Length: 432
Image (cartoon, rainbow, N blue to C red; front, side):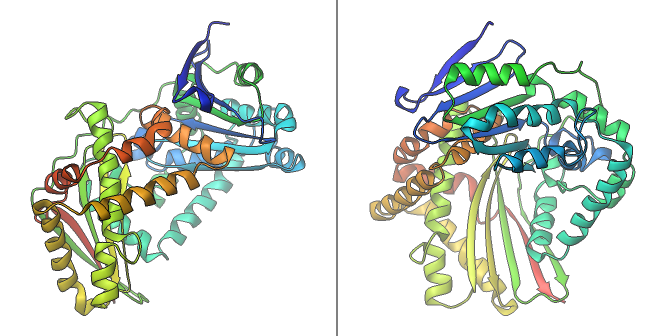
């Protein structure tokens, strides 16, 4: 077997990336002190791979993967994993879909073949397709009961006026009703191929055994099919304040949702290292603004002035675009004032450096959060898989040191460049 093995991070972590003969990538970390095995399979087949008319296909396929193969009837996979005391789940986003199991290490040899069988040989039966489509349509209907989902989707539509990041991952009733099982099989055979897959295995499985198990179970793959492709347009910068208001029945508190576009991992504007360092800095700015009672916006808007019930911010790094958001829950009469204060505080970030005390607090919170989110094999598997889809799994091993390298002047530059008080999108939700 011809293998390419690359060590990720320090040798102490024993994390290796292995390229198998068929093109599949395996990320392995041996943890003999943990008698479990977590397997997380990441596929570059998220919502941005769908043409417009197939919107929702990637998420719908996530459901249909579990409906069996020619050799596994529907429900057999879940029964087998539960019978061995394991757990399983899946998720779909714009850049990926991923499927994972966690089981006792001694049972991986019995359980892993079930997961590989589903992912490679999904049958997508016609009758199950019709039944599961009703489940997904109900999921779409239920999402409209969530005002925060409605608001964020409206904000995404406002921000991404060309790019598929603005489309709902679930799709729409119209797009799903127009789809056929044959089209889904075509989508599956096009994208669920070894060069699009990363299998992450963390736990009490030695590397030689891990390679042997993955190579034998994730084989053979079907010949690649072809399906309609989407070539996303680059999203132009926001050069004004884009604004919209929505009125919703039974809304208890108003929402103010603000968003700023930033480059993604694949952006041609900078090299990868610079894009990543900007992303780490935007993480720090998010913590500075709204993480904890002493953060700037929480302290002023909630604790001191009582203008909001809650306020949060976040930075989402994606392959083709990043998104920085601030969301406030408040009474309608405070909307204009709160938005003006937020814009003033962003201007201050650009004009004056933050204190070293604030910077150290933000770094401490982010590094602690990273440590807490990488304590178990399943958490580690998720981190390695996520970063393998975005850029490279080694990013997961260097996050704390990259956060520690951020300086005050870096944050001032990022706030000035990305978080303009004059160029953003805002969605306001009001009680009807």
